[in-house]
Amino acid sequence: MEDTNRSWYFVERPAGEPDADCFELRAADVPEPAEGELLVRVEYLSVDPYMRGRMRDSESYAEPWDVGDVLSGGVVGEVIESKSDQYDAGDLVTGEGTWAEYSVLDAGDVAPVDPEIADPPAYLGVLGMPGRTAYFGLLDVGDPNPGDTVVVSGAAGAVGSVVGQIAKLNGCRVVGFAGSDEKIRWLTDDLGFDAAVNYKATDDYGAALEEVAPGGVDVYYDNVGGPITDAVFTKLNLDARVAVCGQIAHYNAESVPTGPRKLPQLIAPRATVQGFLVGDYATRFEEASEQLAAWVASGEIDHRETVVEGLENAPDAFLGLFSGDNVGKQVVRVAE
Image (cartoon, rainbow, N blue to C red; front, top):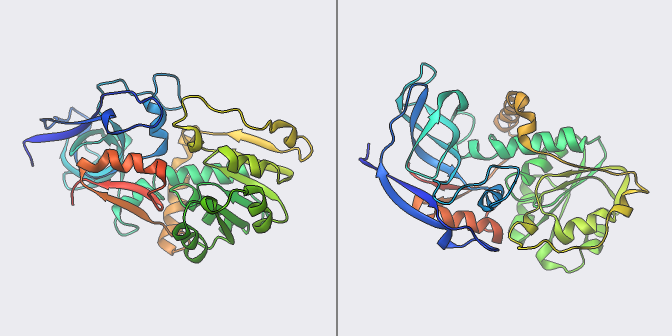
């Protein structure tokens, strides 16, 4: 084990899009676990769009970071020292840790990682928080029925790619919006989406949607917001359901622009629009984790992780989320 522990600190609140000045890499002593805790050597850490909200000095659905905090998020790693009967040194676990080489985790809040089911980074994606977000957001909020047309924005991301596959398993027709031809091919050729739109290749999202979903939209899983969502709202069918998961199009905006007024378009179709947080379903996480693991093990759900090498590149990996660098889940490999 190393004598020092490198960690990323949040040192400046951004105005608009974050940049490298928001982060600082510092070295300190390796932390000591207390009773009930685990010292974990981090192998992979997660970067996620919701973290942008934690950089604001205001209320958000995730607790804001204070300037000077060590950055935190999901990690997968090896237990180096255990002060708990639940885990032994050498076990692989996943939980909420820090952007660091070594992190102390509460043994009661971690879960085991089984490499026989999937490689460890998948436990930060399809078998982690993004997978559970897809599961509950689609099945509980979207409430899809066989034959429904399900549209997913941000479809090639960690959440959207799982949403589309679960929808297919439920007998739906699935359409995705993504930002490159590579992502479109992945969605349609590998994941089984019925159609997909490269939103960077068109200025008329409404016309593009009409082409791929001429029968309208029964379920919209919204990861993005902005003009894509404006276009989808004009195509909602009777009793359509909209699950609002994220609004990445607005995360870096200093003031959110007022777009077309969309509420009148919900009246005729009697559409339901519901925001949700995956934490609302905490008592059912085991259900989702077991089902997702079964689908992954059987090959019914595919997944991809974009791996950025090196702890020193964690801020770049995070910032890359806002330019669409990732296909599937974006993770950072900290150690082998």
